[in-house]
Image (cartoon, rainbow, N blue to C red; front, side, top):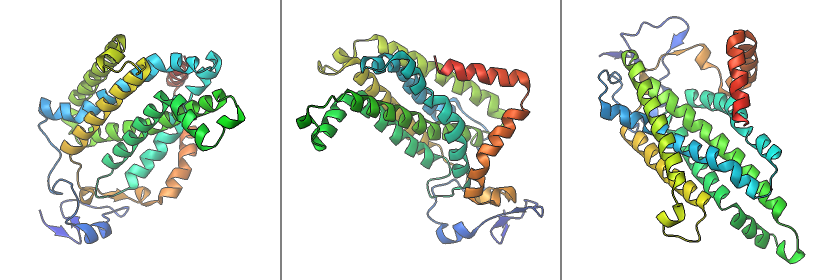
Length: 309
């Protein structure tokens, strides 16, 4: 397929569209993308769909561990049930605020690792770090007390433990957003329209499998499985969820390539600066909320309240 000035001839560009090639002129030979002339896979085998959607299952294992054991763990640290409910509001709030902002950054980024995979990897690092820090929050508080020389003052470390746990819960929910956003976008972009229903079904399978694994593993005596008597139940579940998430994310990122940004035709709207796009996110969210049908708005209210239970 012939190209002129870096743009594909077969694409008829309107006045409001352009093909940005300045990035590729500097790094044409260093992008781990598919060949720009290749179309997305038109015949998706079950193995390809499994690799593409397995991260959905891995992320669901994390959710199952957090939702089933997170509240009892926070209560055991000394938090009241009412305060615990407010802390878990971090989930819907970060979904409303963080995910659109991350989506804007992802849409406008063209790196050697792709638009989606880089954010998925960064989010995974944040999820694993926050989960493990939350599981060992009391040890982390003791370390900080020694480092800050608080133990010699005979101070109660309970407020410090609660503060660190709260920060880790918010960090966990914020870190999950890039993984969710990146996987949803990657699944849609790497599947042709004729296969969208099929890949959605596979994503549902992975969601169910992740939930089943997470809740079933939580039923086991994890400390005996790991043969670590000093390991608490919540710590063992967090380690397991972290390992599953890392394995699924690495599988998807290593074996699912992204389409070359050279083949993406950008419009005038997409040429806006990243800062202006991010600044427009709150306005767009408010406009979307006001203009959505009443029945859909009611469903959103119910979903938001359910996340607080």
